Image 1 (cartoon, chains in turn purple, cyan):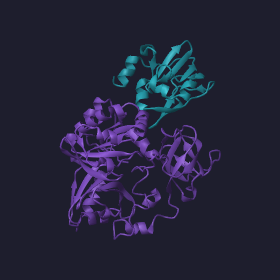
Image 2 (tube, rainbow over the protein chains, first blue to last red):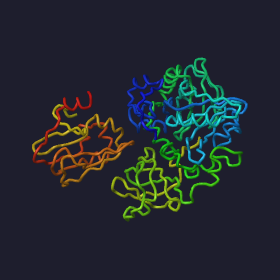
Image 3 (tube, rainbow over the protein chains, first blue to last red):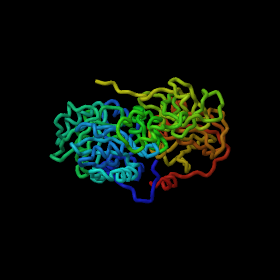
Length: 379
Length: 123
């Protein structure tokens, strides 16, 4: 997690819109971002059943361009980014030389020799530093475009129909755009990168626009979706949505101390490619007893939350040594029972293993399960 | 809806309605809004002897866990079974149907007036 600093809070270009909508704000990586507008649960359910509108303008963006842009990214990141096609997106990892995760990020190919790297807001500085450090010797340019990029996500089963009905918005090919692909669109003639990506487990789109355009885009999408159930959705619902979808969050499931394989991301690094930062460490791998990420489910309504200790036996026993720790947990709004992600010693990771979680002094039985907890029905 | 000015308040964002020797307690609208959607309540059963200022229950929202402090010394005479079944009542009607406990007490500690409480939360 990012420590709060003394620097003044940063505001999204949509801040006034959020205030007008009655948002409650929270500090996130130094930004004042909306945590909810009305109700976390209502926003969560709206995304699962209709659509939600998210402001993600705090996220970090970097443009990489030049003849060796792809080769640079292949060296700097764990995936084979040079191999993605124009308009394709790929989830990747930025690793430390020691094999831990500096950030998880999404890379888009926006031109033959142009890429857009989207990183977590909390990791803006370490990502900027690592990329700048690793570009030496490559015929490529790195530009931090975070301040000139606003990001609006439209997520939920109704999202495509809403974008198609958005006044002033044009995106030829939207109806054929596949998951993890992006196309160029326009809003009132201004450029918009339209990506079919997201972090909610639903179908949805992410719109990269200039900050000057953000308010008009937000308002137009909200108006187009008004009769289709769209609601503005804050970080609280984003967290329960991504947890149900089993998506890791940096600072919770991912950290500098985590090897990709521990987090279930062993297939993200392209071990067949030439040298990349962190490769030697990955070949060594973590210790054989290093904890691994699992899902946990329970009956009842009491949620296991981040940092709660996990014990080997079911709840009525009294083991004293924890065998794991919860990294994220909530009462799942969609499923109606507690869900959590947790790191446990590998011998307890088999699905359907009964464990217990110490919930503020009371041990309750949880059962390991595979991720995700929730998978949307494909249409 | 209860008249807010008839209630007393604590700095832990609880309200207290005194009727004879029984105090009905709940959390304020401000606290309910800060917590977000409340999804689970753990309340002490009738007969539980509680000490003022101690933690006697938990209020879980989607995002966090809040503690319920006893505003008075006494004995729980009733907990609100309706809010255990439907925790959202605390959000929708924190001063009414979302009450939490009735506590029989012998002595009432000093509590905040509505004006004092509003000053505390900056309203």
